[in-house]
Length: 221
Image (cartoon, rainbow, N blue to C red; front, side, top):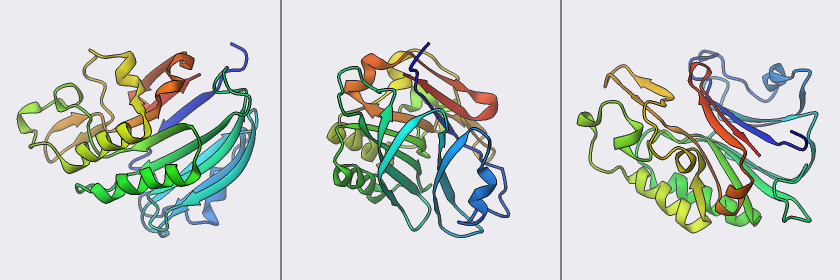
């Protein structure tokens, strides 16, 4: 299909745990298909997050923001081909996140503020949310589910304020056993990696799917 835009969220948990990529080592991610590498790194020993942009994508980056703790990186871009046929200027906010494990209202409130600061109408947020959206659908061991987490509520608030949707769940409302994380301690699987996007972009989605073996969530426009 011509003029297709592909967004991929890849959780590489378990890769390079002892030596995370600092600003210099981020160049290790350079490949033939990569045009730009944008990153946020806390230290060389823990937490780093990246956005890689293909050489095949004609993109103009207008703004880049990142978290000094290595939890998120955000860019404001003009994307060609257009992400929406209704756009004359195709400006979009792309945010990659790695949410903290404990319940944290502040983290998702910060993400909401970053999106508002950038100010674009169209938003795509992907990454490791460290939280299921619906325990009944997104966890294998519902019996061990605790009461509603604060972070679950915070993600709901983020969605409502920014008018976002969990696009995979919208397109696959009844599918179970699509998990991205295994907890040995709790002996349970869960879907904690998500892509949220502006609800006005839903009509442009061609497909979305998880490649569980590789920890990928793929979104095609």
